[in-house]
Image 1 (tube, rainbow, N blue to C red):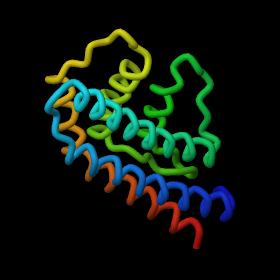
Image 2 (image 1 turned 180 degrees about the vertical axis):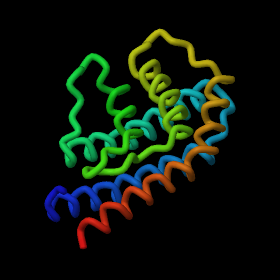
Image 3 (image 1 turned 30 degrees about the vertical axis):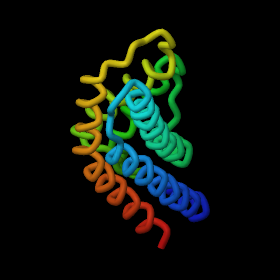
Length: 155
């Protein structure tokens, strides 16, 4: 098991990121799409939501030395690792249902970040926004269960 200091740092980081994720989520939830600027801004918020979530994955991997060797598939692999229960090391963070949603959101984030000439499809953004709203509390539950694991190993 990792030392107490590393687990305390991870718990603090997760708490801070959780607050950021909730703020971004609240803004996404309230965002009304009336025009192209609203559509792009909603895409930007969903991009930021996933990046904040992925930052938690990275810190968990660093803390438990669960590194990803294939950097060409880094983002997919770090997400996939969060569905793995590693006996004696750490429990999985994500349920399969959340994994599937985050994999879709990860794909969107990639396209949003790298496809400069890409025209954002309002229907796809709307569907993804609804899915994010449906899955947000499930993710917070998964995160709470993982944080409970950390707290149990600190004391």
